[in-house]
Image: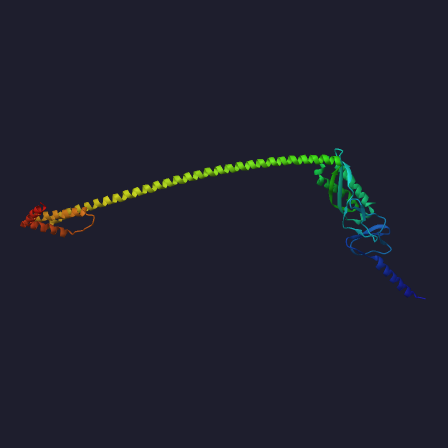
Length: 361
């Protein structure tokens, strides 16, 4: 018979094994588990190792429905597995396209898709009976209300507005379900065959009208460009003619200036030459008079002095008319005059004058 100690140790080991196998919960990444304590909601186990109290706490695995609709309404996918792991990754709700009525009673087929995520598994498990059906009903109700505000023509261009309205409505309602709506897209907006044909014809006419407007605008732009080109060409021609006239006038002005400068320089040189000749003539006369004064003061003999002065005067006159400058000292001029006077006094000069006259005859 086992003793009490062995039984106690066995019970302790059993309790430890129960705690290890039931109390330690390892939740996979991207999953979450809901824990009940004595049959009531208690807490949520997030990814990683978690501890619960065996016999008091238990993971909820059944009794709730978490599904989403995919493949355009063809399949339903469960968001919880047999171990009670609830997917908290991003999911999509892709219901079948809905047949709705527009403002003008036209039949409109709308295909939508929503992307969501379970952010509060506790509410998703306990606060909503069927996630997929409730989600689908909310999408259908919201689209029916919003599509009824548009007619067949305006709804085609209101796809983004319709998707945003649907996302806002889903977010307000699903916040109590523990969901977060990320985005809602309208994949397709279609009509029945008769309406589609009429819309296609209207669209074709609209495109033709726009093409005609674009063509007319292009022709107008072309005419404007050609007019601007002609204007620029005329301006360039006028500027070229103006520049040529200015250059020609400047050339004529420069030629006249050069001609006037040449004429002025010629007159200046001529005046300087005449002034130089007159200066030399006056200088010779002045020197002759100075020689007379000097001869009268230095030689008392009137004849010799007079002849000397006469000779000096002739020399001065010759100097004034000569183009070459020749300076004769006053003493030399007076000596020539004295010699001439002596020759005339002895009669030699007269004989020489007569001989010169005969020779000239």
